Image 1 (cartoon, one colour):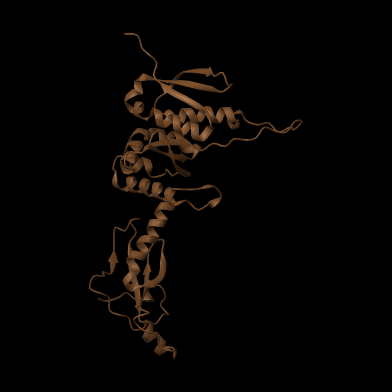
Image 2 (image 1 turned 120 degrees about the vertical axis):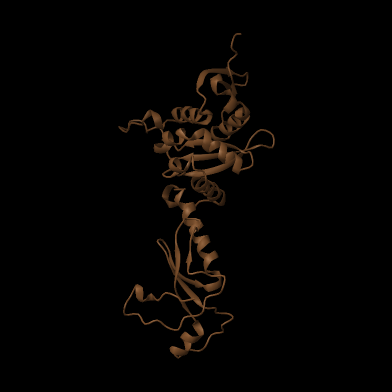
Length: 283
């Protein structure tokens, strides 16, 4: 197969003798994980290149021909028989990083990359969610052990995108729970708690950044799409307290199976004991 010369990029470039491409290789690869088109620009035999440059010859077995590939986001040299898997991994990493943005450019964990990849897969495979998920990304994700042997996945989303996430909340959570083998998925907006200012300081702390306000807002995110319709606090003899949260019965079908997970996640994140229930309605 004819291999395209680098002359298309630089007219002054003189193409060296290219290697023959393998039968299973094609000139243009489409439908890679990111949808990019990768094109082979040139193949170079290192043994022939060494002879031309009067260098010590290298073994063709240890040093297979190199391939230069060109695409919208990638341009690099790699081994010819490995170039497609190599770029598949590179593109996968690119798409994963696109769906997760951590503070201070921190490296995502392996689990966070798994969640980000799941979001990207949903964006490309689910026509109902594609347009809504296009501009959405996450900040972080953790897995928490809750009651029994159950596990819950807590996904932190940017505060400014919380309304966009709520538009697709039910569908997105349902699809993610399928992908993660029935683990309960919870979406929380990223919020920061600011320490109280020092005595005598003129700095004022916004109420939305206080510990109480952040925990209350977290509670609302946790049970969404259900609304909190009532709260009751009971004080124990030892001085500790437990809160009972009543949820709107209209969303009973969407939230009842996750009540224990809600309590476990909230206890893990805040250290506070809560019990979720639905108010008893008179017949």
